[in-house]
Image (cartoon, rainbow, N blue to C red; front, side, top):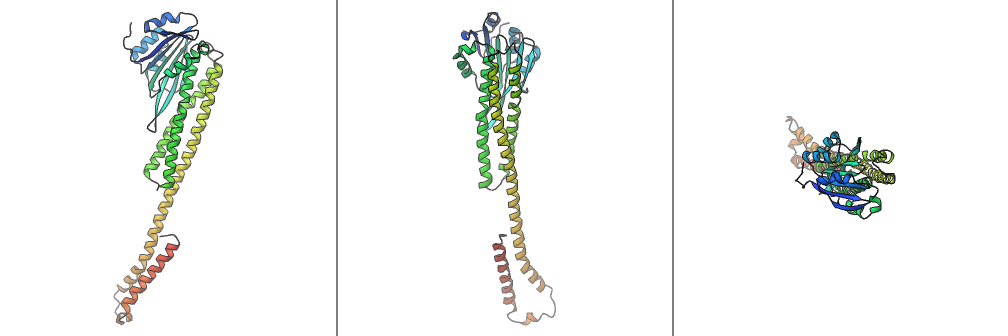
Length: 328
């Protein structure tokens, strides 16, 4: 069966002794796989079921792995199916300050490497060029190409983490320089959610690297295993940066809520202070509103201005006292 739609095929190239033999068509893959000291590196983007069925036929892939590759909602994992490995890694890119997640699926065999990218991800052409510049390493087979792609994916996590740290700094500045707001709190919760997703995406990769270092001898060249330890070290540093940002984020949320509580207390103190001031004329005027028949001061011609003056003086003295105490 010939597959004519090549829009989802990013690159299909054969290598022998670490040197490129040029691009391949889908029909030439099976013949190339029979050659000694050679392997095929195929890159796909948003591959549909028809193309994946063709890939399954050419590389003799397991149907369960192909079924998983059709879906872009897989957790990071590594599984061995007979003559091939199936890996899933999550990718992350920063777009306008927000994190967009994607997935890269790998089929790894003794003589082939197939990548299937879904969602947000960066093209792998730069990885191919870097590997082509190291034919001695690429001669070790698809395991070195697998390491190069995984290292590229992990390296692209750091700019994402740094971008989230910049967002956190802006939100932290807004907390202390501006009044606490609902928008700032929502921004903190959104940032926390993205950090949790980023942590969930990257933490399983440590176990994947450890497994690649210790097992799957038929697929991973012995000289390449040490490189996966280097990836694991990078992941640990990135994970530490994520955890540090999460701890600071939790502290910032607590500070935000504390400042909001303080602001509300200030409002309550102000209302209580004005209530105390208004209580003076309220009490005096309610006293005279009782309409007693015998109130001697009512016959005094200066009683009205004296009472009003005392009310104003008492109110002003109370206002001055509350102002000094910081209630107003």
